Image (cartoon, rainbow, N blue to C red; front, side, top):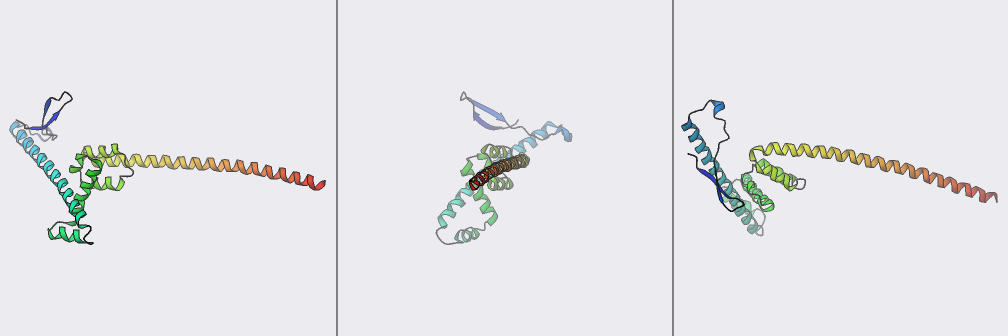
Length: 202
């Protein structure tokens, strides 16, 4: 029997229980033995829970690393690096988890805890271009994150092309307006020359 995965409170404040279901297609691989399906599903759920626990702890580690970084920032360049090196911590891991914490602080989205390094780097690099709804979309399904990022980039390119075409159109309109102004000014110059000629004849 599957263990219960998550308890959530619905609008009526009643407790509702969701049981864990595997996304793996056992029948595709001709696995029909219920005891095998049950054991693999149970183990899969355990792995998922361990992953969530580790993600939560990674977020907590990022918070603590960020705090020590702030404390040591007034104690000279390189102090923080020397400190975490003395603990045997890898530089990439330290800054990756600090970045994870900073993004969690910024967006307050718990899914950041489970996001891949690539996803976090993409969000950090493009945070000025991305709308909050797009960030949520990327984070809500870690498995589909890469696909969502590609869709957003494709959409961005189309918008950039539309923007480019719009700029060309506006510049052409300005050129046309400038030509009309030139014609108008040339007519005014000719009128002034005509008046000047009349004045000289008098």
